[in-house]
Length: 51
Image (tube, rainbow, N blue to C red):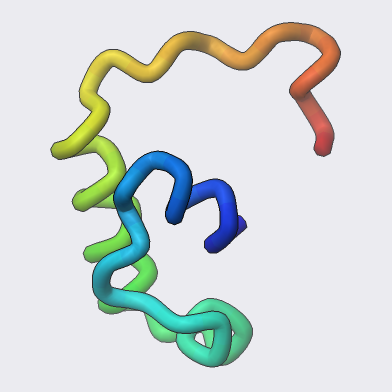
């Protein structure tokens, strides 16, 4: 997940340990940053769902 976030230039706020620990506030900041930088993300294709 974080490798893909790096490709989108959205790797701020969280580390792998934060994600694994379930740090709610940092994970929320990560998602907010993702949607702020890319507000019109396309829907995933059928082959991408569940990966």
